Image (cartoon, rainbow, N blue to C red; front, side, top):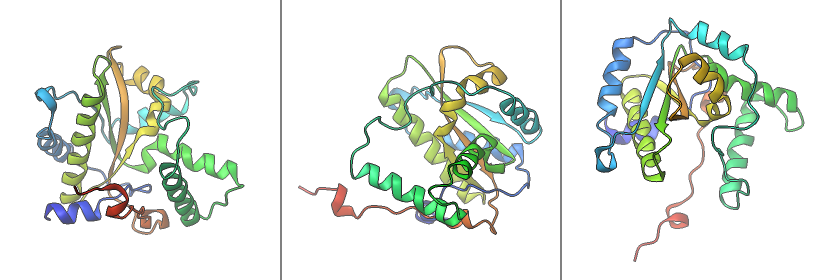
Length: 217
């Protein structure tokens, strides 16, 4: 698979098969992803893998933990303006249409949101943290590392979903993994093999046309 194909076919998967992922494959992908660009070669990512063997215990821990009052960081700006607000609204409505959950069914929507905290049924996942001393440039390094991992996973026949929603459960995650206080949980990553029969996995989010965001001088 070439890079263009991996970019085109990668998408966020929200229903996974139970098929396990070999730890040796995860090691290989993570080592390759570490070649992602990193300003000053700081390599600020710190990754904690939840293996198939650990996943049941981890999910039981999350299920029994209280929700925290505020997320680790604001996942979206408080006042999201157009066109960003419009894009977020549309992809949400497109997803719930595939799930056949109407807008006024808040209970069902909250239930679907809670599936984030089950890794959408993926057998494996990881958490990506960053030192609290790092700034926005290093956060961009995390994005490049995560994208590199997702494209490599696509090449290897795996599917993924990057999940910033885990910032809302950072306290429960930390109490299980017990990472250092100087680390901040940036996101989770669900990893596995997609359920081809799940309608939600047909979702492909729109992209704005080039002329809406690129200017050639």
